[in-house]
Length: 478
Ligand code: ARG
Image (cartoon, rainbow, N blue to C red):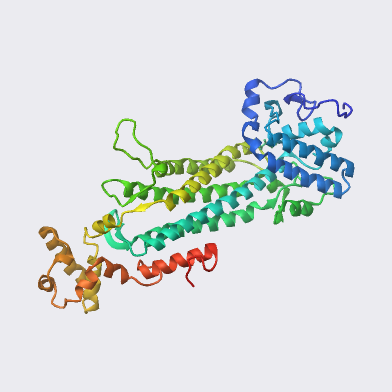
């Protein structure tokens, strides 16, 4: 073995990045094919954080000297600065973020830098880095989801009384309040935050100490490293610690659902913005024009969000397939976890950021919504319920109203346009108070129970959500 010497660069080329055992360098294509530094350099901050916690533990356990520890801290501070200033030179020859930083450390501080990797492997190192990085990312995304819920709740409060048609099968079904419709999405995004918070628990565990796969012969203190890095727990099995990517898959699954919800909302925004529907206008800054058709204003942001759901779903599938064939423990396949994971986080983050802004700036055309709710016999169920309350079995009431609707279709009018005498022709128990239930306002107000569409319920739900998000007094109500 050549004598260790800080002036001798053991990382001179990739063939020698880990040992002198290799007799020929890899081809350029193999180098490019196997390198991850092009994309994993964004883990640099996490990598340095993990290394500092590891070095602190090595020194505390007497595995490296205090002088070496101090040198490592000094060297890492400089590297951090070089990266922040954009001066750090990333080299493909050094394969990944870990070897690039380690090589620079050795350049800066010599042998102390070479001691940093004692009791550690890139396998537990990279697993730690991803968890640190993802933990921060989850916190950002939870915050964005909560901001979006807040926007939806505020818009819902403004539109607790605004009525639009509710659809099933995209056929007019029953009138609903726009606030109620918006709060449905707030519920979805609420479950998304719960899923992310749950995934964070399993992400926030420390792999370091697993070393390559079996643990290390050095007297390490994993609990100390976990405390330094803010991990809740230490991974209990070294083989699992280096090879587990469940937490990343869980994140991608949660992200896939977030994008599914965003995509459903997007589909509605696009429909509502269509001039044929005209329920809303999105602020101009979220739309683009056409290069040929001067009249166009296209809802590009929701359309793209709907499209980007596809790539996020794809990343989940890719990660699941990436893992399914891997024997224990670490395999290089795992390097493929990063690009999809990063793209998932970036896509969800950008999408949510845009939606927070966009949902705050929706112009609602209440007259168009009301007009649409008046078409399609949206209060037919209310008439049936009215008859039931006067003693008819529901199935008979359903049949009676179906005949009335058929009549209105032929006469091209709404149920509420029929005279009392005409309505009584369908059933003699009908009285003048029927018109209260046939109106849109009567219909929504009557559904006044937990989860119902009544304005009173919507106000209550929106206020309760805002108070959960922002604390008591968020809405100026007690
Ligand atoms: N760049 C590698 C990755 O992302 C780091 C771990 C490499 N470990 C190894 N034994 N080759 O997974």
